Length: 337
Image 1: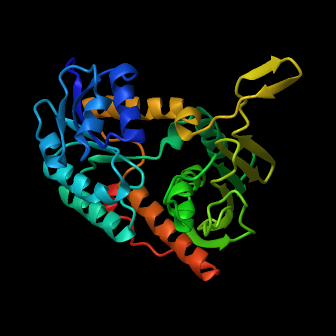
Image 2 (image 1 turned 30 degrees about the vertical axis):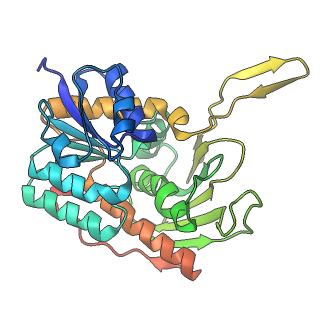
């Protein structure tokens, strides 16, 4: 197939604008055909200089725009369910940024809608599965060279939290990536969660419980802990150490540029996820474009998005109640077996 895949990008904010740039300048085999955002000025700015793109305020008009054959959803989470169902109704393949849907009930409705179609249409944007370091760790754990994995120790640090960021969002927004990564790396579902609350950092906005220490139990008897600290003040850091029966493996220590100048030496630290995971995002979108053009859907799907939402909701209850909360999810449909 030589024709470029026409993509409608929903959302022109920080993430959406970066995906527009990526499709236009980095990814092969695709073009931006339409963009939708309630702020049409922002949408127009995001596609400035790109030929053949229509700008829309509404999702439906973007999906129905000439040349649109696939959808990339980068709008806020609460808008995802409506956009996904609209894409499904039109038979359009989708790459949806996480969360699939913030609430597990809505995520389950998306699962049920895709099951009714009888085929997968959507991939969820858990981009860590496309990061080179995470892929190497996955291959190592799958090989069992170090024996069975017993524990994962994870860190997730941000420079600062955006306005309006809540204590619950440390779990259901930030740690959602660790939830999916743990399920993928271990090949096990997460069955229970406990959230411990150390003394909040003085750098955290008033009322924000930051940092948090989250512990997951898995169906296979492994433990996963996550230190999430969204107001570290110094950089964006994501790391994971797997402790196995016969050894350990750690990722996330890759160094940035080292600078030596008068009086000292320092190493750069990434300041946000678009820097740390730039290559992973490129790989993810390219893989989605290639699969879509070939008539396939690969990568994490809506079941993975639903599972992450269920676990995150259990984590928020654990944060609020201060105890251990079990994870309860519906049986996995045959479509995702």
